[in-house]
Length: 204
Ligand code: GRF
Image (cartoon, rainbow, N blue to C red; front, side, top):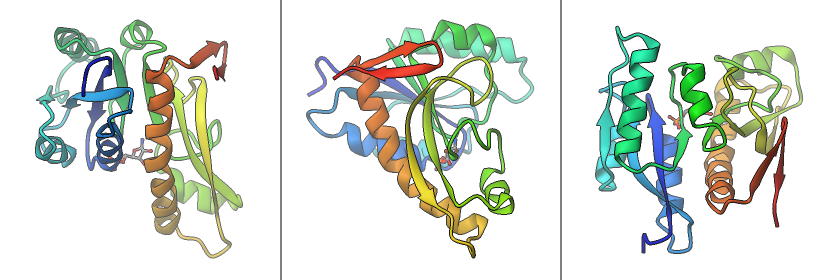
C-alpha cells in the first residue's frame, strides 16, 4: 500500500544503518511515509546496497570537486523530478547551501548523535566521554541553515557510565537512533509537527 504515503528521500554518505531502520519502519502498512529514493553524494556509500537490496531507487550525485551551489541545484532538481516531498538526512556528510535549506525548510530533518544543543558537529562521542557528562543521546531536528541548530523534534537519552568509551557510547546511542528516527519521520509525515520559532509543537 503506497497510496497516501508521503514520498521521502533519504540522503546518505556512508554506512546507512539509520536508512535501514527507516526502510524497516516504512514497510509497515500503516506507516505514513515511503522511502522513494536514496541519494548519496558518494558512490561507495554502503547504504546504497541496503537500498538496492530493498528494491528502492538510488541515485548518486557526486559532490567531490563540485561547488556547493552546483551540487545543491542538481540535487534539488533530481528530488523535484521524482516527486519527493520530505527529506531525511541520515549520515549525510555534506554541508548544504542556505538556499537549499530554505527551500526545504520544514520538510527536511536530520538525526544527530547527541542531546542538542550540546555537542554539535563531528567526533561527538569522544568529546562526550572526555567531557565527563553522565547522559548523552540523540536528537532529530529540522534542518536550518546553521549546522545542527534547527528546531528539535525528538530526543532520546542514553546514560554514560564512568568507564564508558567512545565506542560503546556510539553503539548505545545508535541503537536509540534507530528507534527515534522512524518515530520522528512518522510525526512529520502525519503533518503533526508545528514549528513555532525554535520550538516544535506536536499536534495530538
Ligand atoms: C549517525 O550516528 C547519525 O546520528 C549521524 O551520522 C551517523 C550515521 O550513521 N548523523 P548511519 O550511516 O545511519 O549508520
